[in-house]
Image (cartoon, rainbow, N blue to C red; front, side):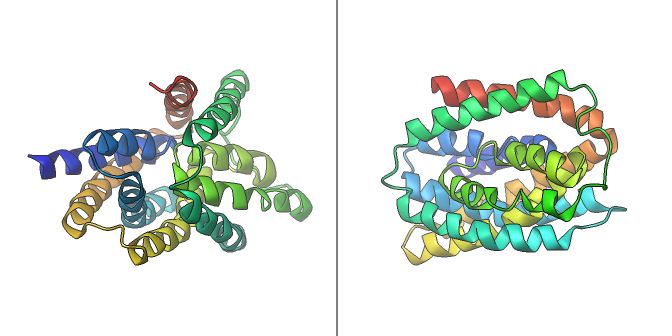
Length: 247
């Protein structure tokens, strides 16, 4: 029964996250922690889940589109530093303070996205390389937060790339999943080397995640940017309230 529950939790988390960028951690962390699983092990399971599902989701979104490999490469490398810091500090950082801070940011981004009616609905590829480079300093922060909790990172990255790279929602989510693969893989290796792993649990969770992400990303890509935007606003709003008030 417990095994089926873990698989189902991972499936639902990846399904919703792959469609909105809200982050599978909003479901995985509280659900697994409530089952008595230690925080570092939950973080390790979450990292393994991401390794399994983000590339299939990115592939579904990127069919027929161009990949900005320079952005993916530079953002990934810088973010690995933050990932390492996240693994080192995951057992000692004040999770509540971080959650409130990120909740405020996400709520502001969701509100702004709602008010800007055409935001993220069409691609624009006219921004200068200097403007595109503005995104890179944020990689360290997002890499750190990805490991510690991760919920909302897709929203933060997608909003950032609206203004620095001219992405729409589909491009933003797709590139975020490509970038986060290296972060998740690095974090998973570090957690496992520190002894935080449970192979059967990780396999079940990863299987559920892959199935959920495949279905979610294909459905969202077919529905288009407008659907993703409204789901982005809804999931982001729920996530922000949860982070702020600890529900």
